[in-house]
Length: 508
Image (cartoon, rainbow, N blue to C red; front, side, top):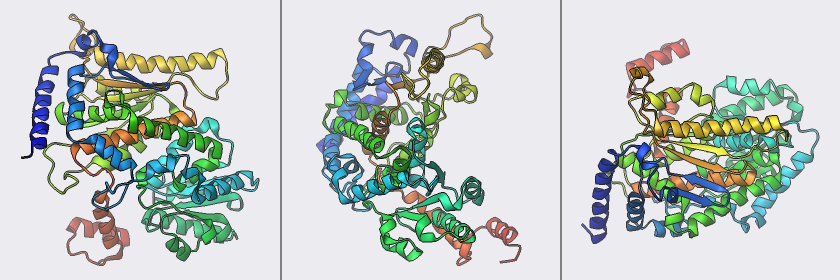
């Protein structure tokens, strides 16, 4: 065991003792401790309130010491320097480069920008349909919905699922002569996207619309798109070192750029770049992504919380939990280290959530009174955007914000009523972290999303996993291919073969 390993083991051992000790202290008591305000962190108009966490300054300092002992600072420098930190694929991680002002001067970005502006100026194009799945769908769809108040372009739809109902429900809303389709697939081999594109090809042909004017492609493999039938001039590429779940900043965000315009898209990138700079340069003691990433580790590895909730109190951000779910679970849902050894502690919590206040009327019952304790992030903008500037609208948003605050307080404090029946007992001591900002502008949203990307990277690094590959999705793909082609069914269960028979109406 090296000296570094011994130091890390000692810190981890102390953190386990800290976890046992903090369990004896209710949040009711902790939140009134002197200096608790020091657990509020600020960057620009963004505030992260950690006062309702089972955390003390001593514990936070130990978590920061753990990060330092594991050389997190070196890893962050390597990421921004373009080193090959994705070890299993021997690649750098280049999504942050897409947010830099220099990148926006590149021929690749200028081509994308020019095309989006032309589409927006074309009065004949009324609808955009993005065909993609995973990172080619979740990120762009979430941002497009999140910036609904800034839309001044064509209506944008997203189809990810291979379920034909998903596609045909969208096509029913579109005119084939005024609809532009964007095939978004990093490898251009994504079976779900290609299946949907084949259906679109048939729909266009049936309606007498030429393929070369109705479809463009976003991919890192241009030749495959050309072979499929896309005009090379209508193919937009991006770097293979940009992971799918980190790709909305690239040409994958073309649909967003068309919806809100290149200026707003630039502001989205500006916000993300500001968070990148904060992450790269701020001391760990005030570095918000580092602190929030370490809290993921604290909850999962030391407090034993296997799930983590993300609750945006903004209906336009209703798809943010799904985006964060892919981001964190595909990145950190691993059981081996980036060097191929079994993990010695669990990593990657289950990520889930729903827009508030809707969640309060469904699963918040469970958050308040279940035997399980699930920490959550509560996200809230302090002001609405692009609503009627009247007293009623302001009052409505104030009600939303007060609900968010009330839930954070209720989860932490509970209520002590000695004479209350058991079913009215609220134990409290349920952690939440409150993230707030001025208003959900493109800049603010870009900054928020980059924050969660960096949280994922920090926690993954401390756990020791590679947050930039996703081999876990491959086996299911291969089995689906084998079942569809009937090429090798010997290894499948009798139940699987029986189901295939029912699907095919013929014996196999």
